[in-house]
Amino acid sequence: MLTRRHFLAAGTAPLFIRHALAADTPRFALGIASGHPRPDGMVLWTKLTGDALPERVDVSWEIARDEGFTDIAARGVEVAETAWAHSVHAEPAGLQPGRWYFYRFSALGQRSAVGRTRSAPAADAEVSRFEFAIASCQRWDHGHFAAWRHVAQEPLDLVMFLGDYIYEYPWVPGRVRAHSGGYTRTLDDYRARYAQYKSDPALQAAHAAVPWLYVWDDHEVENDYANARGQTLSGDSFLAQRAAAYQAYWEHTPFPKSARPNGADMRIYARHDWGKLARIHALDDRQYRDPQVCLPAGRTGGSTTVLVKDCAALADAKRSLLGAAQEQWLADGWDLKRPWNLLAQQTLMAHFTSRDPKSADSPGGSAWTDGWEGYPAARKRLLDGVAAKRVPGVVVLGGDVHANYVADLKSDFDDDKAPVVASEFCGTSITSEGVAQERLTAALAYNPHIKYGRSDERGYVRLTLSARQLQAQLRVLDNVKDADSGIRTAARFVVDAARAGVQNA
Ligand SMILES: [Fe+2]
Image (cartoon, rainbow, N blue to C red; front, side, top):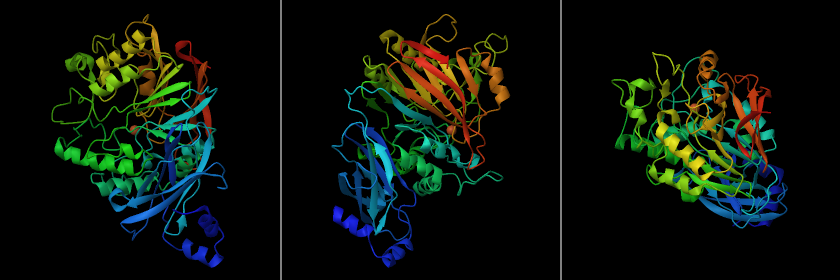
C-alpha cells in the first residue's frame, strides 16, 4: 500500500522524472468514474490502458474529503488483471453518508485525473433536495457528446444513465464522426468500442464530476435483443455474444465486484434509497424478457410495429418484460413510507400508438413490440399494483426512444376517466437520432395522456426532487453536431407528491 508520504514524494518529484513519466504510454487514458453510491461508500472505477501491461498490476486508490488530498478518508490497492481488461473497481467502505469526496488512482508511475463523487444520504436522513439527471442513447456517429460537457457543469448529486452507452454498429460513411471497426460480436470488439466511446473528453468530464447509477438497454449487446434471442443469433451462440458484451460492460462501468458477470448472467436490477426522500428501483428489461411477438415472415429476432388487431399474442397475460422474479421483486419492494418511488428503467412505459385506434383500418391502434407497448399485460400488472397499494410518488424514468416524452400513466389508457396512477419522464438521447417530428406530432393526437413529445431534441432531463414536488427541466442542445454546442431549457414540468400526473411549470 502506498502511504501518504509516498504520494507527497511523487508530487514533488524532480522535473526530469516527471518528463520521463509524461513520455510513457498513458495508463489512465479512459479516465475515471464513480458509481452506485451507498450511504457508506461507492464504487471507484478506472482501467489501465496502453501496451505491454503486466498480467497483474497493483493500482493504488485514495479518497479524500478535500480536493487537495490532505484529508484522506480511505485508501487501498486493487489488482488490475489481464482477464478483466485491467479494470479497477475499488469499493471504499466506512465513509460518511451524504457528503462529497475526491478520488484518484496511481499505477506504473502515473497518476489518474481527480474525480469528484459522493455517498448517498443515510437511509433515515431528512433530505431537502436531490438533484439528478437522466440520460441515455449516445450513439457515437450521430453526434458529439456536448451534452456531457453541460451535465458536468450542472449542480447534480447523481446521473442516472438509462441505457445504450455504446452502439454495436459498424462504420457508416458520411457521419459527423465514425465508429471504428465492424459489428461488435467478440470480447475484443466490445472492449475496443468502449475504448472509443470513453476516449471522449466531455464524457470523461461528466464521469469525473458526479457519481452515476447505470442500467443497460439493448445496444450494449445488440439492437432489440430479448433474453437469449438476438436479431440473427439465438440460444448458445447468442449467449456467447451476450457474455462477451456483459463482461466488457462490467469492465468499463463502476458496478460493484458483486455484480461481476458469471458467463452470460449479470444482475443489474437493484434498489437505492436516497435518505427519507426517495427509493430508486433500477430495472433490467432485457435479460429476462419474453421474446417480442408477431415478427414478420422470415425474421428470427428483433422487433417490429404491428397493428394490434393483427397480433393476438400481444394480449397474452403470461408474457413479461422484466421476468417473473424481477416483477415479484419490484412488487415486494415498493416504498410506502418515502414520498417518491423512482423507476430507473429503459424505455417509454406510456401507451403509444402511431395509428388511430378508432379507425376501421386500425382498431386498437398499433404497437411497437420492443417497448412496454409490446408487453401490455405486464405494464398493466405493474400499474395496477401501484394503484392497489397506493404507492406514493411513482415516477417512471426512461430513454431508448430518442425523444422527450412527458406523460401521465394510467392502468387503463383507453378510459379517459381512469385515474392517473404515476408520472413519466422518458428523456431524449444524448446523440442518437429520433423519428421525424411530423410523424410524432401526428401520433400525439391518439395519445392524450402524453403531454409532450419531441423527437427532434437531443440532450438530457434535469430533475430536482423535494418532499413536496419534482421539478423537471428538459435540457436541449442547440446542435448535436457541434462539440461546443450550447444548451437551453426547452420545457419545464412539475409533479406534486400529493397527486400523480405531470403539470406544466
Ligand atoms: Fe438508443
